[in-house]
Amino acid sequence: MAKRSLSNLASFIRDIGSSCSAVRIIDDVLIAGSKNGKLNGWSTSTGELLWSVEIDGIIADFDFDNDTIYTTGPNKLFAFSTNTGEMLWSEELEGGGDFVRIIDEEIWVTSSVYDIEVFDFIEATTQRFSRNGKLLEKWTFDERPWFLGATQGGVLLGLGRPRCGGIRIQPGEMSKHFLLSSNQPVTSGADSADRIHFGHSDGTVSTIDCKSLKILDTDRPSNSLTTTITNSENGWISGHEDGTIYFDEIEFHIDGVIDSVANFAGNCWASFSKSSKTDFVIIDSAQNQTFLAHENRVRFVHSASKGLALGDESGKILFFEIEVVERRLVESNNSEVDEKKRGLLKDRLRQLRS
Image (cartoon, rainbow, N blue to C red; front, side):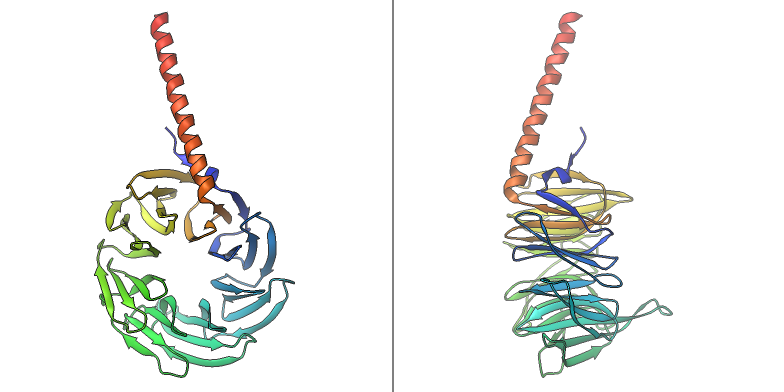
């Protein structure tokens, strides 16, 4: 029997025109950016397009507050009004823009420099801006951050080589390097109010206290690179390159690379790919697995109280609401039961005829 389609569970589907590069739900707005520089905001209630802005180059990351959206692109930080679509200001960065977060009414941004001769990142910078675009402070170091978490008025960064570990940066202070459970590069991360989970290239997950930097927990659900991680009610959910999903302290093994994970209404949603094939799996608290088909690879997923959003490599943006998902899964299951009954009836009629 063919897998059910992921698209059939969506409340609405939109198109951003090219491969999705970032997606988040902030308040009542679903925001998605593309590799071609488009950044759109849709109402989660109606699916209506609320605003659209555009830059030259990929949308690397963004954050949104009130009527202003801040986004990083190639070598610049941009601020746009979501009321008019007007660019309010832009400022040069020290390299290609990576992460951006609004923390205590200020804009924190990371950027990095890639050297094509050594095929690696050679320098990274964290900058702190005011809301009107004034540079307040900057810090430079050798490692590219692969995750930025907000904490206590500053940021915590998960680093790649050479030092690995993390860096804490506070306004008016020198950056502070600290060690994690693994000495291997950080590849992903997820932050909450008081702790951050860092995924490493060797499959380890380090959990630290944001204030003290004390290591609270260490686990290694896989020996394979941690491709993605998110928070859950019982700690965290991680996905790995070898197909391992760690959810509710249980390891699940999927045939493919785990590209993204999300915690949606207490269930694990994960996208995975193998060769050119992409699929989705929903794992519930009873460990039941529902597999769904999708046409294009999904690397970007974000869940919030309003729902779950994802963006794929074709530019499709899908939004899900748990009530709609549950209803359509029940309808699909009932349809499958009816189909089986019809099949059994046909078999009986054939036997009678013979």
